[in-house]
Length: 268
Length: 249
Ligand SMILES: Nc1ncnc2c1ncn2[C@@H]1O[C@H](COP(=O)(O)OP(=O)(O)OP(=O)(O)O)[C@@H](O)[C@H]1O
Ligand SMILES: [Mg+2]
Image (cartoon, rainbow over all chains, first blue to last red; front, side):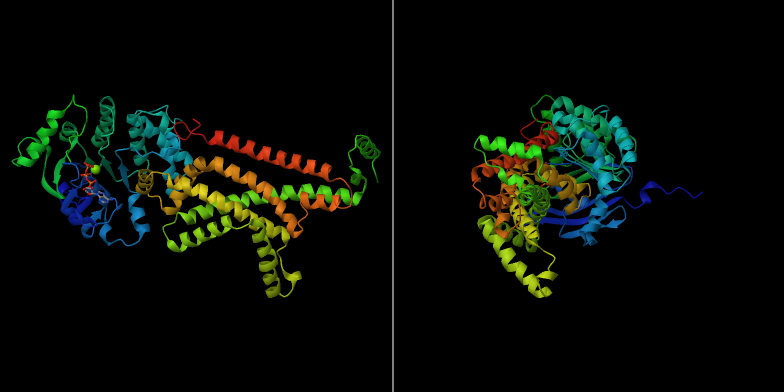
């Protein structure tokens, strides 16, 4: 009926402009600009302490920057003053953490169902049906009644992904979701995320898995010292970039993979 | 009125040197039976009151708002550090009197001695529950709370669905301990003439020479109540046990 809008003229789902954030005297973000479009996967790479997690926490309003603009899904987050409004926005954004952070006293099914049932007030039977579908999607059918303490790290992380998806979020933020996993279980989690992104999930991923980032991202940004120092399509960042810091970081990590001890190349 | 079977029992007991003659007096027997009933009613109301107030107090103690946390802290310290008997006297003789006066006479005052015992002793238990729960709430890792916040839980929803369930599991053994103490504390009711079992027994044994007999009954009675309380506690502990969480897994 209407003429299709060229994708790039639509407003981005996430838009950060000149975001500055300090913890006390420590300046953590020093003017971050970022756009994430619907259906896009954006990866953030960069050294430890460069502000990657802080950017994700700003996007879902867990922390508020002192300066700058944040628009998420049509909401001007930086203008919200009431916690209730921030909560309303957070319900539409999924967050998956490095340490899974499941609720230890709830079964797998309850972990997934609790927020839609108790926070959104959706009918339990409908939510549980959706939860079972999601468990199937993260390849954990049959684990409904298990408790987090009975699952491997990789399994817990897949439950955490299902828990985020149960809210039917418009955007999911992944913060180094494989960094706490054994090398053998990293693959199973990445496979799940890869499927979700192929199915059109909008996501921002902080990751140290360079090959994965290159494979699944539409855009890769490189952060250092609270700034975005390079961004572009994966090919431009990983192969044709002319920024020596980016190259050093990528090859530094690349050299350590895959046989080495840690999955992260962090230097403090 | 006296049942022949009862008369028989009293006689047999007497031949063994046990004096339960008061059972043949309907009046004394009623006081005594009412004593059991009153103690059980006290226990049955005080336990839920103490638990509900304990949770509310724990929530206030861990609240970020100072106007909530500070009064809760003052209340807990006052309650824990002063004798319950004195608190009860202050409430019943002082507060209750003031209420009566302001309402225009004791006849207008809806609160009786029973109410004040439940309130004072229940809140005393609540202070102890609150401290146990507070420790449990503070043991919940920040990362778990952040996950809840990221899902859109507000402060109260976090308390209800995350902090309290986890804190309860940690605090349950201590709470059961508190409840056992609370059951025994119902006997302070005798100080304000609530006819619970010790009050009833005192009334009877001052008329007759049967202190030992009634004492033994009181001891057995309280042991039985507390056996039930601690068994329910153990059963709850097992029911709430979660693999990979806490001691019992
Ligand atoms: N709540 C906080 N209070 C004080 N300083 C903080 C806080 N959170 C983060 N920081 C500091 O902000 C800086 C950026 O932290 P952030 O977690 O965003 O880094 P990161 O890029 O995610 O690093 P990593 O790869 O180690 O996760 C760090 O120097 C960190 O110590
Ligand atoms: Mg981080």
